[in-house]
Length: 119
Image (cartoon, rainbow, N blue to C red):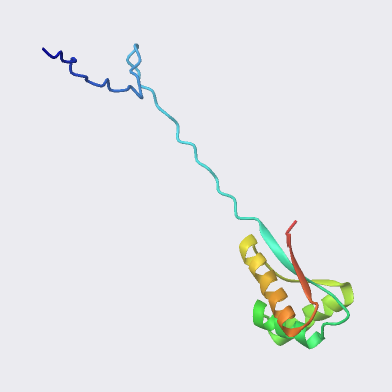
């Protein structure tokens, strides 16, 4: 003769137990304020071997600058040793730096660019 186990009935969990005084429990909704993503600036560094015209072309092609703005940035790079090409989110700035380095390597120039957090 086989014995049977009594039927199992799971107990319903009480997520919001009733209070004995008859009042209900109210949870407050917390609002989270989202901050904008941190921004990074793409900075080109000066060297004595990359032609100025190549820097202007890179600024026009990769950063969408017009001829006048590209020339102004190129002169800042040449005179100050570095110049800001644009401000982007981290991923976009990293991609822009990689594009500059790839274009410079393809053309055989030692042009360098870095991304830095905007302070």
